[in-house]
Amino acid sequence: MTEESYIQQLFAERIGGEEFGKDDVLYKFEKIKRAKEAAKEENPDVELIDMGVGEPDWMADEGVIETLSQEAKKWENRGYADNGTFAFKEAAAEYMAEVFGVEGLDPETEVNHSIGSKPALAMLPSAFINPGDITIMTTPGYPVMGTHTEWLGGEVVNLPLLKENDFLPDLTTLTEEQKEKAKLLYLNYPNNPTGAVANEEFFEEVIEFAKENEIIVIHDAAYAALTFDDYQPLSFLSIPGAKEVGIEIQSLSKAFNMTGWRMAFVAGNPKLVNAFATVKDNNDSGQFKAIQEACVYALNNPEITEKTAAKYSRRHELLVEALEEVGFAATKPQGSFYLYVDIPKGIKGGQEFENAEDFSQYLIKEHLISTVPWDDAGSFVRFSVTFVAEDEDAEKEVITEIKNRLAQDDFVF
Image (cartoon, rainbow, N blue to C red):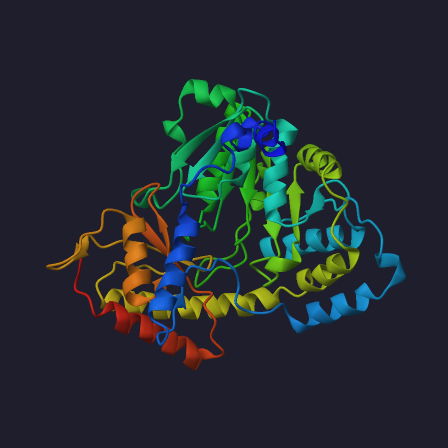
């Protein structure tokens, strides 16, 4: 037996078993990538406008970068960070109080750092899920925690985020058996991809639901500080009773333009934070201490986020106006950098669109505009206002170009 043949039989079933690597199915983001490459090759003189990138277009703040530079030179920062520096935990607790009004978090027992939100979401099921247990997720959404739930022998129950329900999950649709088996409820507001926000009333209902059914709430708050207009940043932990039932994951990636820096923190119920820390201690040895110190600077300067949010708010307004002028029903979100819009049925006298993926591919091929399609609960495309533009004039030029390209078609809705 050759080396290749026996290795092919040793892959775990959770990643495909003997069929691992043989699947030739193209998934959504690979299709988008290939379509963009083909469109650019066929239209070398037309700039592709990428509205699908889900990460900030700005660099981290100069103060953050300078702090990293200085801290990286210090001998005492060279070693393992394990479960995080006290300085970072303390800054995180103070940040939660200043920005979200969450008072009294204990830095030692109720805060722990993570090397980004994604690893936290990936690790948390290991602390709670046994075979047969359920994690309640929302769809469309970020599937990492669900993936790891299934890898541990658990089950995922998806609740659709529907436009008629303001893109909030309807917990009343769960069966008694599902509620009995459920251990985790994952929420994400402001939401990716819908841009929807939650309110205090919704979180109060979630807390009551969690207590009644003895379920742990995990709120992914990656976009929580990026809010606009009359909607103020809202933390799940600011609601009375939240710390009794759950935790929140706060990220520096989106709020502070630090995606590649990989820093987040888990805060809330001390037993849950401790469980996360225990699993984390068996997965990594902590983020570089110099990065943690740079993140302390960021957390101590929330005006960085306010400036970033003002930019996204401005761009959302420009994009909504442009899309409305060519027929879309677009509404400015109150948080995140995502704009989620219904797709058209087709083009008058021409092509019809079967679903969002069909429409997204059309936009890339015919207009060199890249978006992300979602067909999980209705057919929508997600525009991200994180496109690269040097100043406000450049922003207007990008949006005007989008409008001009789309105006070439007479869309039917």
